[in-house]
Length: 202
Image 1 (tube, rainbow, N blue to C red):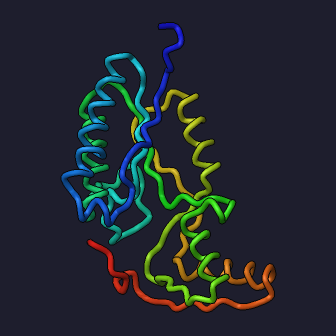
Image 2: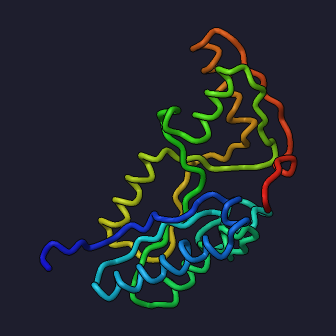
């Protein structure tokens, strides 16, 4: 049909890392099986798939990964993302993989991290932040722009999309703390800890 799109951005997935660890079969059905079937259908219809992957395809030991760094996922979610990546690479029909780092919103009320911090700070709760987990933050609007530009330029292969600076949560919180004090006239308490101190499923 003449109204067939040129590309399709694949965003549908279970992104909760703990949920993937707790329910690997159910989340594999969505994150891998259903996604690969959708990609097959798109290719058959001559629509380029743009698969949104994640930096969790790496183990996090070294950091500063590039597109040519060998993946080594240690989380169930990362292994699921990498399985789809391998399918796209092996298909030879063309496709685009975009690996995202931590995506945030400039509107804290719409953001999982800043929004939670704001609600906790307003409630007077102590906020725990890891000082040994590094992330490269990028605003969701910049992610949309990057996807658009890559699609416009008919890009294929793997691209990393992230910010130009790495932060620990504890470092980022200090900037949040300054803004909170200026806005609300009171302080908020941060307790620094290790990422291993949180009770994650994996």
